[in-house]
Length: 414
Image 1: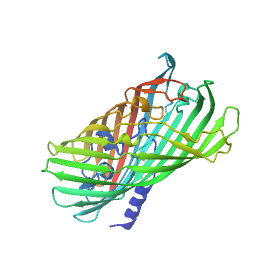
Image 2: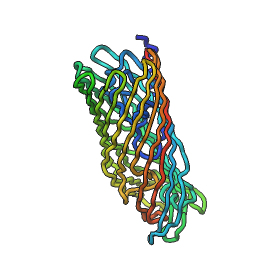
Image 3: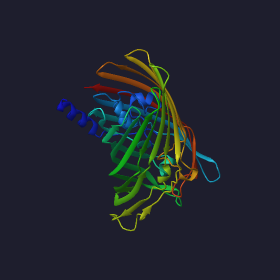
Image 4: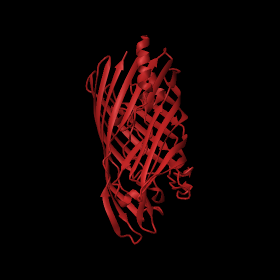
């Protein structure tokens, strides 16, 4: 094997890209083929992105492969705000703040039984933005979670039926929250605040595949929860002028999840995948931030707490792939993602309801290269949620929300 190719593959996979997701929290858009099949892509042949979708399936990669993927996500939506009497006091739209989900993957077959893979891709990310002069800004006017996971993986093929994998996860998050500080007694904004920090934490994953025969296969993937202890910088810009700074600290736990998949080959040209994902969102029970060492004493509260109490949820997906020839293929998919946000735990940081995603895609491949493209439309749905004590509204209704998706992938085999 050419050592330069291995070094290049590792460098590409370990490159931690800047990632921004669309509305929502969990990211499933890890390759164009995965986008095209609604995320139901656990049993693909010769696809280095299996590192992300199903580590046990990197045993389907013959030889050595590198892959890069880039997905564009553009969120849109509207909202209405109400006072305590249920009267509408404001209507508006989000500021369209598109983002990119970037993935890099490398897989090498060591021998007939063993494989090594590594990927760098986002599991959790989001960005949302609203007008700074709106009443919604008392809750949040800019929120961003940049996330990337680097996952070195070892896979073993026991026989024609069984394969399994285990891997580590090095997870990075960069969090930025901006809002207007609202005084409910004076009924006015008294300043803008910004909380910004980053953290690295460790997790792990495991996966297994079982092939009943040449046409039917099942698989399961578990990804552990990851707890970040986030040290951040807090800044407040009062309307009277000046700046107040403080040290901020918070704990954010990214949820663990289970993927269960079934793959069926109708014939040599057409196949289908079904996938169910259980995400334990109940780990997101609160977003609490403690403040210390303020530059101006007796002005800032010691704690800024916000209860979330999200519930665990399921995502269901179906994907189809049809090969017209040895070189050309088409794909289509649909996914349904439950909303896990309760009425008392919603906010303008993640204003998303249940999600339905419709997608299509195409692929060209020869013996050495694969190029795939995909388009998707995510119908985000409606969400009603209560205002907090320091918000300029008592309740909110998010509606007409959707996300445009476009993705491209390139893979090279060696």
